[in-house]
Amino acid sequence: MLLPVLDRANIVTGLPSEPHEAAIRRAGQLLVDGGYVQPSYVEGMVRRDAGFSVAIGNAIAIPHGQEADKQAIEQTGLVVLTYPDGLDWNGERVKLVVGIAAKGDEHVEFLAQICEAFDEESKVDAAVAAGDADELLHLLTPEA
Image (cartoon, rainbow, N blue to C red; front, top):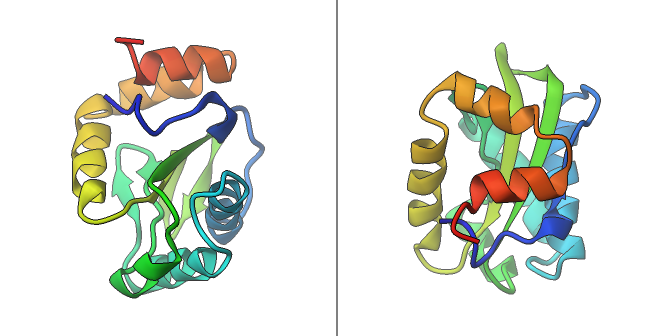
């Protein structure tokens, strides 16, 4: 599923609640630190959410940049953050944040996979309850 681009180092579990923009910036910084994007991409992620919320329901948010930010993507990558107590995302409760940087149209496939994997909030709760990054990676990439 998400195996080709999801690395254990890009999974952070058990985070305390924080403002949703801070969560976007945290995800963006992980993408920067992983060499997936240039720092300017993070601002694009913030602008994208300000224009149209990236909270998609089922306690999930998927921050990503806009079309104009694609030139700041070095390579495709994903990051995953879990917030057991949730955070307020423009009035919606979010517990799972999946940051995406995708070359070309790869983001469409990732969005579909994420939506399929977490089609029920109970599945999000199970992912958030994972004890550590290794357990969550196994849930997200069962064929590994």
